[in-house]
Image (cartoon, rainbow, N blue to C red; front, side, top):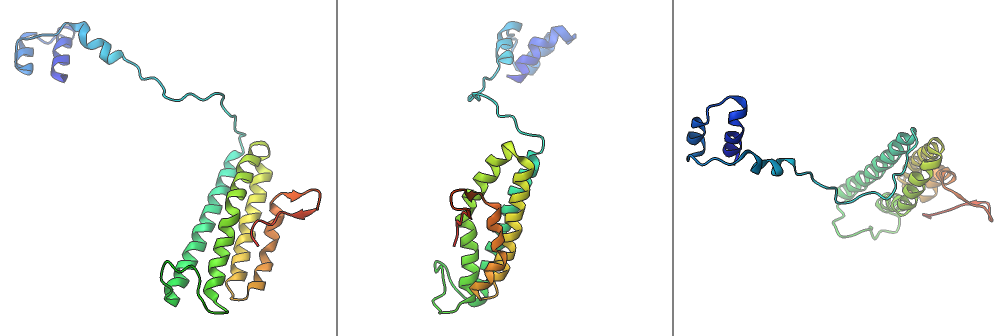
Length: 185
């Protein structure tokens, strides 16, 4: 096919037509117009957006904050995996059956974060459309608070998690009650 297309263009660029028969293998020559519609055919988009959503210039900060929260969840997962290996807890066991277990504290810190994560991301990404700097700053407070929360929980004493409980202030408040929304107790 490529050789045939080359032969149809040959007279236009000064190549003798006789040499085309050796390329194609036969003296058959296509008219110049037959391949042109195939080359000019344009692809059409499959999906068209109804209306573009303009993003503020500072929305990149919101995306970076969302990425940092993903790094947080992965760090917590690695901490759980390291404790699982250290204590010899095999899958699919979710928790250790001991009464006071450090592993259970690691697991719960991660699970608590994952329970709040969808709401956090939804609030961060949608709030960032109108208030990107504020959303990114509050999102970063949530991430840092979650790190402090986890490190307190990792001590093996669940009450130490309260040292990082201030991360709840980064989430929206219930106006009627004046208390933070508590997604993961």
